[in-house]
Length: 297
Image 1: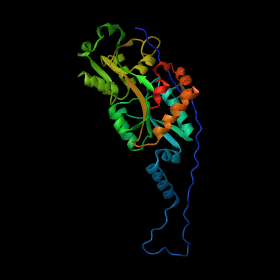
Image 2: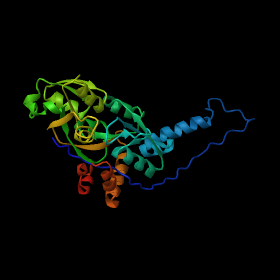
Image 3: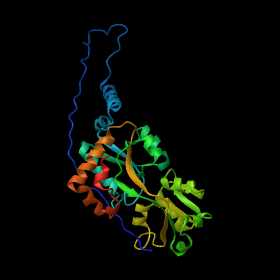
Image 4: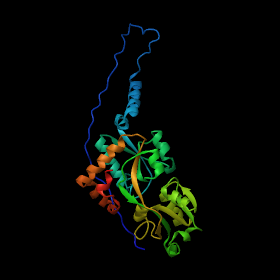
């Protein structure tokens, strides 16, 4: 079976700068005791913490700018987020996140998360967004403030290449045990079909399960399969057969976050100046990009 190569990445950088003013309280004179029942002024560190909390209450963007870092929740997911030989996170989503952070005037930090806990990580402010080829399901959209969709995807079945002919429709899958990423769209598809599955931490782990023979099959994202499965990849003995659905990727922020709208503007600018398309070609997934006209809802 021929492997179809998809592609996309982003190099676009937009400069956005925001000047924030800080007020300071004047401390009472040293020889003047505070009136009884009057609270003493907070120390500088306490003021800074309060300022950060106030920013968070009023604007997620101001919260991120006040701490100077956009913390991005990811998993190891080529070609969206993965490490190069030097250990740096690269990929279409990783590069987009770097450029978006630069446009906000902040640094970017990537944190590997358990995908099943992504909403908890977001709401507890361990991370500021989930940017990792995330399928825009109804559950995701109800729990997060999501960007517009930017990329097409599908959930597909992965099996050993020498057994592919046996598994060409959903009826043929009923006796298989699947490895799936916990909390993923792949797990949802397998569960909906009533198939047996073993949840694992990441889609890359699901591939390893099939390659080692621990699981009969896996269900993963088509973009990941195109990059990691088949001839010329690390999983040359695996292939993909059935497409179970069609879906779209988006980025998730905390519910009510103003960063989602800012990212939508960033996407549109990237389509206009051609930077998104140019970077998409770097990762060979440009065919999965959603048409620019459909990005603005």
